[in-house]
Image (tube, rainbow, N blue to C red; front, side, top):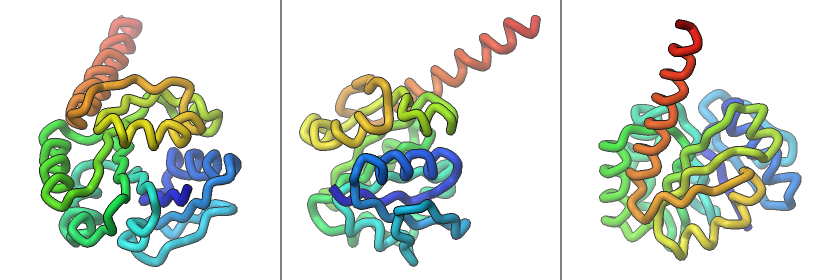
Amino acid sequence: MKIALIGLGAMGRAIATNLVHDGHDVCAWTRSGRTVEGVAALQTPEEAFNADVVLTLLSDDAAIRSVIVDPGLVSRAPSGVIHVVMSTISVAFARELTELHALYGMAYVASPVLGRPDVAAAGALQILAAGGAVHLDRLAPVFAVLGRRVWPMGEDPSGAYAAKIACNMMITMAIQAMAE
């Protein structure tokens, strides 16, 4: 399976490395110019959409908007591509992305993760996945490389981001309670 990453921060590098070690054909575009051994460097984010699966690992709503939405990449993507947004984004933006992908007939799967870069490197992320069942089934081998467990969050991608934000809030509250 050809997998493209958009973003090679600490999480993206760990994820890309695991995919390469599992034998996937991996390429990536990154704003920073970082590289990962075994990962083909792309010159533009649009090139990423020539893969079977595009994993977006950008920092937030604004980054995804500027790199993917504003340039119209979803409207020009070939049919059959699954766009997986692993970033933690707002529920409102997730709904906007759902509408945008539906408008152009492109598969969109939410899969924010629980775990730090060291957990990603160990292939032990907790993946909160939401999207069409057929797309989640197709992604199962990819998720098996990246995570210890996939938590099904239904068909609506915004639900996965709501769950991730709730998890982050609970972690913050636990840290605050321990500090007390």
